[in-house]
Length: 307
Picture 1 (cartoon, rainbow, N blue to C red):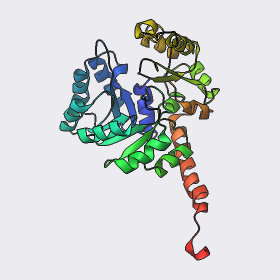
Picture 2 (picture 1 turned 135 degrees about the vertical axis):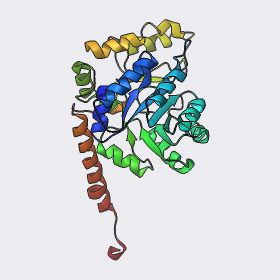
Picture 3 (picture 1 turned 180 degrees about the vertical axis):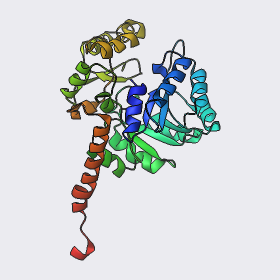
Picture 4 (picture 1 turned 180 degrees about the horizontal axis):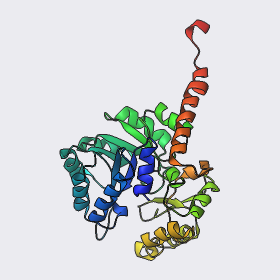
């Protein structure tokens, strides 16, 4: 859902909206989407390029060429080793943020030249890695281990979470699931309503036995995938592929049927209770963070004069 509608709304609200390159079928479609986004906002926005294992990989180099040619200034990479892409983007003067789920991968990305890291905790939607380490541990480890700035990802959706991330050393936060449940998100309202009524227990981990763990919304399809994985002798991806196809996931968002396919959602769904505009959401979050810092945390500091 990282299309021009949502990316422009986030940027117009004061955040950094992100287009997802692989949402677009071809590099030329990405070019059109970048140009369309520019008709919706005059603010900066970035592009995500996720490098995933595939039998027939997308033309990553061509997507990268379009990003450079269209003058994008910020790119978020994720997934497999981003080394060759970081080098290419930095040569074009692009600021590169790499998303990682472990400190060892963060250190590698730092060595490869990333300008900033997005540290993704186990609470996140999508692929949380195989270490099962939450943000509460990863973020202070990142603060102690890295020489470049980082933002916090996974489990964020309100101002208290923002304040906590700042306290743990992050420069800011990255949100996915929370923005999925905004008025501008280009998905069916029934899916947004499903998220509003969900609890923190309404996500499932699939592909555990395939060592490619993914956190998705808990539904009939996710349960079926897990049952197949638990069968004696394990499962091959080919056995679950028809259930987890991207086309079925796309239909979830188009038709509003939460059981049509799998769709990613983080544990933050338990804290989502409304469907605001992006502007209202970010305004509220900043106020909540300021109130948390100025009103709650400041009262816990006792001056020396009172001791």
